[in-house]
Image (cartoon, rainbow, N blue to C red; front, top):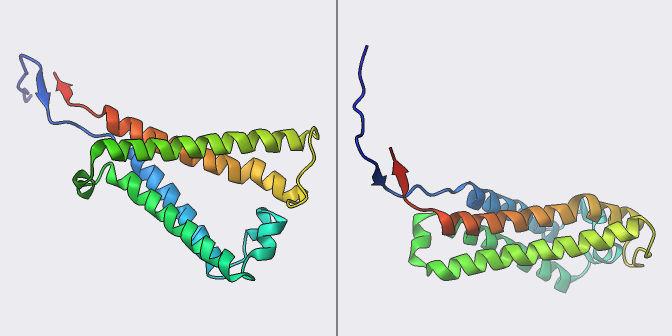
Length: 173
């Protein structure tokens, strides 16, 4: 039976970085960007889940289409921000700035989602009316899909910043 050498004392080994949250945040952002690019290119699937106003502007208005392209680019940039935390090319950027930007983006998304979830929940139980710019089905889509989607993204960005900040050397025994 083979014997394995025993370590007599603890030693510090190279830092092990936890990266799953940053990769998940990037995937979330790239998926979100893809939807924007699809809609900006004239796709209509899913537009009716947003609002009457957006549904009316989609594909019909040049400035609105430009805004959707820009939001897609910003979402893709968010994916790159998350990856910068864990990829070698991200080490060229100031670490503190990366952490603040990632945590800030996550915090803004999470707060936005929670505020919208609260508003849609109050609308769903009938305490306040659904806005005229949004049909009732779109309000339910926001409550059950879009606002939880935003919350998931916010949490992933916050976790990515936290994991990146707390990654330390591991004590091997």
